[in-house]
Image (cartoon, one colour):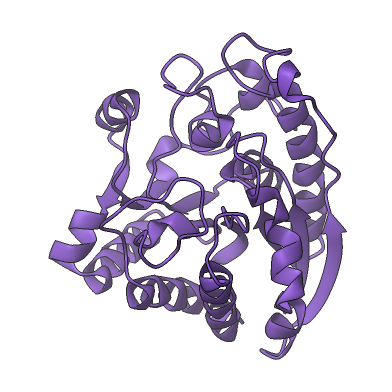
Length: 299
């Protein structure tokens, strides 16, 4: 398959420096060659331009959301790159950077596939809005905005209107959910499997149930957004919002292999590698191993 690697060196969404070095760190450990050796053609499109912004100006474009306008600018450009990739029949692999980039990757993919489903693998729900967020960090809002919830600058990014239906959202590995997110999950009846569910039901059962739900809806187009903090914090010190009691590497690999073998994943994010927090490249090594594993099963 033809893979477009798109780096997004942004930390405005997390307000914690270090994650912006993620894309170049993965290139340093030869992410392009790792993907190529799995019989793919790889186009490294470099990094999306991220404008410089003074920390003192983080609230310049909104009273409670940090760096709103720069995040919108970056994600609008990302959305267009992702859209061009899927139109061309290529697979956009978006490397972060923080999870605010999900705004752009989902917008770009959904512009081409109007029945898009999103599988969000993350310790967090990322379904806050500017009204519910306890931090004002936009990396906690992309999934809500993609469902049309929140500020219009986020919900109407790249094109007007919501990008995905709540019934087509599947969250796996959540274990650090804010009160507003819990209320939204209940109101919208979102499909959520917590890490406790993974431990009690088994990742095999969860993936089988999820796939059956997709087949019942005849959903053939999926965007996979993978945050490395879905893994237990002992395994991945190099991420900005680590949470204990997370998934194992084996569970993550089962999920990735299963989804890639369905052949319905059309685009993917890989986010939140923070090189400034990493220890002896532990997280970078796990990240590259997971990427190798993923593209081994993508056809």
